[in-house]
Every structure is written in C-alpha cells, then in structure tokens.
Length: 204
Image 1 (tube, rainbow, N blue to C red):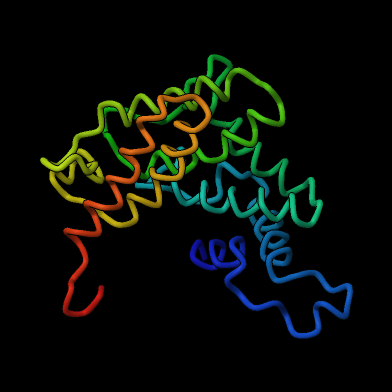
Image 2 (spheres, rainbow, N blue to C red; image 1 turned 120 degrees about the vertical axis):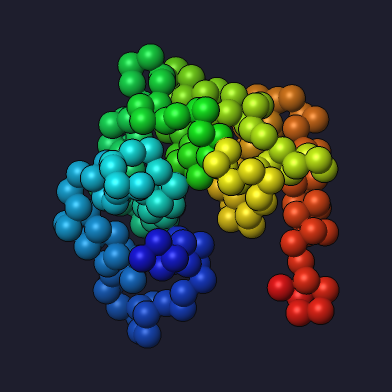
C-alpha cells in the first residue's frame, strides 16, 4: 500500500482512462478517501514494531495526502495529515514515542511533514520538533567514510532506503536553517552509497 501511495503522490501512475474528460475522482483521491474512511484516526493507521508510534510508513502516507490536498484542494486530506503529526508532537514540541538513542533513520521520514506545517501555521512546536530530529542526525553513527548507519541496532549497515528517509529532510533543514555546509554532507551520503552499494556488473 505504501508503495502505491508513493507512486500516486509523485505522479508515477498513469491517470485513469478518460479522467481528463470527466469529473471522476482520480485514483489518488479514491485511495485517500478509502484511507480516511477505513482509518479515521491517522495515528492508528499502522503499527510499527507492534505499537502505534511516530513511523516512516505513516509519514509516507501523510506526505502523499499533503500533496494531494494541494493539487486537488482537499482540506480533509490536510487535516488528516496534520492530525497525525499533532497526535505525537506535544505542546513543548517533543515528538512522543521518538527514541533518539535508537538512531533510526526511519524516524526522520515523518519529519518531512513538519516543514509545510511550520510554513502554514507558524507554530513553534513544529520548529522544535524539526530541531529534535536534526539533533538525531548530529549524533547518528557513521561508517568510516561518513555515511549514516541505518540504525544503531544495525551497526555499519548502509541501506538505500535510508537515503530516502533522511536526505530530503537533511537537505531541506540545511537549506532553511543552515549550516549550508550540511548540503555537502547530503551529497556525500549519495556519492559514497553509490560507490559502495552499486554492483558494476548488474547495475543494481
């Protein structure tokens, strides 16, 4: 399901036949409508490691909903996304259920939702939550060439989906709040991962 969300949100699924000539809702809207109907409480959309928590999967769905809300003027999708964030981000800006000492790059993914919420509301809680996630990256264990471990419990392991989880967040945070030198570190994450993880024989 999350892969379908990603493809639809980023425009990688062809439009429904005849959609341009009719008023029918897009597949993205239908998927969103079904999600909201079947899971009315966003924070209970999916468990992670056996419990409801701040998780990358709901962050992926939330980002898709946010982009659909902008594209199709669907405020219900936006409210749903925000309700997920607000369930976990407390009055002091701390992200509930987030365990920084796990150094889990998956935890960074939902942080992408905090940028538009900060822009739209100016609520300082969202900036505090952004800073909290950025602090995790400050202390995230790295390989000898400077690439982030995927998780503390997976020592020395570099996963490609870790780049998806952290790099867009890391880059946007650096572009907005600095330091600008961090953008070079983002590039290094990709460069070193490509050098070491790509098989030159297969291209994979």
